[in-house]
Structures are given as structure tokens and as C-alpha cells.
Length: 347
Image: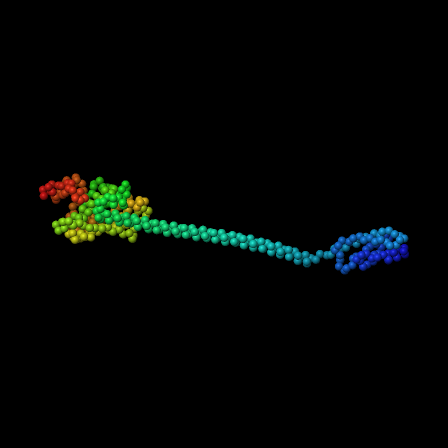
């Protein structure tokens, strides 16, 4: 026993250890490796070879199980907080990045929308300006056509081609009140509506000649045998109403030299008109409205007579008995005589 104790005392210490190993019987425990800090590595079994020869053999050492270091709860909580903040920062950065992308896309879309709206506005403004210019041009053209019609009527134009340049020959008609102070075909009268319907260019030329014969009857032929009454039409275009292919306006007809030709006064009449045009700006329909009785009164005063006889407008009417000599002529120069009555024959 003393020999075993001496052998154990003389055995070298374990590597890295500072303590001595003590054993009972055939076993011995190893010392811990040498720092005050607890080792984190797992323990290993140590073996030592006995240097004593008498009792020889290998001595097995029981491994010492080292306890783990206690977890630092404050450090773990700090690490967890840092991880949470890092995740939040990443999430915020991702959200900001997506927000910037969405904002850029929205701004780009707004720019495109603004450009499209500006283009549409410019197109609409241009179209409206073009439409307005077209309406003004069309109104001016139709006003010129209407003035040309009255110019031909006041000049008693006999050239048919000039009338056909402003009147739609296939569709033209003119509505007038019944005028008993001058001649017209009885077939033109619509008794139910108390108006006349003049059809075609030839009908309008004949009506124009009838109007000139009426006004020239105001001339004092004893003093002015070759004189002719001049008159003109004025269309008030400032307050004209345009609706589609129709134009409505006021008009005035007045003589300019009736008193110079022996009449007691100048005559005039005012009225309204409604004119319809086709796509070629030719007149397809014209309605002239005025006060017939007021104009008859002016004719009576201009002629200086107390009564105003109704002018016969048919051969049958002219053949009736009249107290005065009556002659029916054509309304065109040279005023060919068509019919006379008994009193004319007895002259």
C-alpha cells in the first residue's frame, strides 16, 4: 500500500492541469485545465500509465463533466431587440422603396394623362375654331347669295343664267302674300292660306317683271315718258337667325326716285323672310312676309288717287265690264298687248 501511494505521488500531472490526481484502487480523477474561466469544451477521459513496475497496468480516469456557462439573459434580450429593429428597418426600407416606385409610376401616369387631356383640349379648340370659321364663312356666303337675289329682283334681270346661279331650278319656290295691286297667275293663289306660290326660275322672273310694272305705274308719263322707278332691298343681317340650312332676317324695300318721276311720295315696305339653302348654297325656298294693306295705302298716296282699283290678273277678269279702258299686256318688254276691253276700243 505504501508503494502504491508513493507511485501515485511520483506520477506526473495531466497536461494543462495544475492540480494533482488522487486515486483509489485502480482509478484516478484528472484535474481541470488551468484557468479560472470555465472551459466550454466537453471533458475528455484522461489515462495515465503507472510508472511503478510492481503493480503495473493502465489506470482509467473517470471523465469530469464540466457544467455549461449560464446564459446571459440581458445579452439575449439585447440581441433579440437588435434583430427586431433590424427586421423593422428592412421592412421600412422595402416599404419606402415600393412607395417611391408607386409614386413614380403614378406621377408618370399623371403626366401622360395631362398630355392626353391637353392634346384633346387643343384638338377641341381647333375644331371649334374651325367650325366657327366655317359657320361664319357659310353665313357670309349665303348672305351674299340672298343679296344677289334681291339685286336681280330690283334690276329686273332678264338673263336666266344669272338667276340659275343662285336658285335651285328643280326645287325653288317662293311664298308671297296675295297682292291684288299687281298681276299674277291665278294658279299661284292658295285661297286657304291667303298666299301665292311662285314656282321655278321662270315664275320668279315673271313676278319680278310684274313688280316693276306696278312701281313704274307711279311715273307721270305726261312729264316723264321714259322714266323708270328705281328701288332697292336691304337685308338686316345684324340680327339674322341661322338655323341649319335656314336663314331668317328682316328686309326693307324702298324706292329712291319716285318723287323725281312725278309721284307724291316715296314708297317702302318692311317684312320678314325665311330662306332655305341646299348644300351648294343655292336657294331652294323663300318666304317673304309683309303688310299688303299698308303697302296698298302707300301706293294710293303716292299716286294721288282716292281709290285703288284691283288689277285684273286673268284674261277672264279683264274681259269683264269696267268703267275705264283696260288693256292686258305681257310684263316683259316690249309689253305686247294680250287683251283689251270695250272702253279701250272706243277710245
